[in-house]
Image (cartoon, helix red, strand yellow):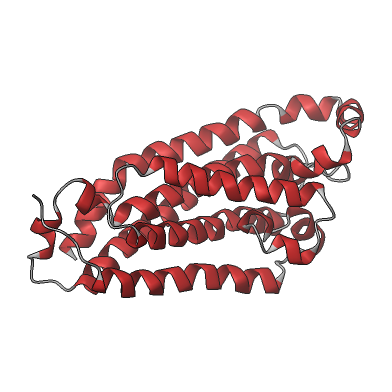
Length: 267
């Protein structure tokens, strides 16, 4: 419990900063919505001039773009990108920081098992991700109710935002297993940015093509199609299951690898 609380304290500042950044980004984009609604037809005509692949890459659907949920779905891809970078960064750093900060000797001589160390750090990280999403959703709900003049389906709005949490869990798990595969990581951010932006670009390229079901498995960003959520108010089960596997398998592998890993003493 002490280790869990210590990790929560150490992650507190960065989580607050990321939460503020993501809320500010959403507020910035949503501030455009009232002006857009006043000239909805002109806005749709403007976006309609964009090539179809560009609209697909940006998540623009002309059928829903003038509703608050449709407009939000367009900016949601940028929010998920930020959330994925935050969670990936957290996953890569949480188990590797003892080696980077030369505190591994201090931690590993304590009367706690390595699985217990992983569990404490894992729970602290997931708590912070969950806290970020709860605060973000609460802030966003207030903003949307404030700027929107009509009604909207709150269930669909919730389902769209819940995908941010799923994506963050996936990238956190990927980052966690990457951190234990390397003997020593000198810098976390380049790895986090490289992996997340790589998957984001793959997802964007898939969206500009035929966007077939098989290709969508290549990028977690394509597992939750916002247009499908708006139409059907649910998730596609096959991608939801694949996402669960992407979360569980790296976490299990991280336990195994970290328990057997040679962690060198500070020299």
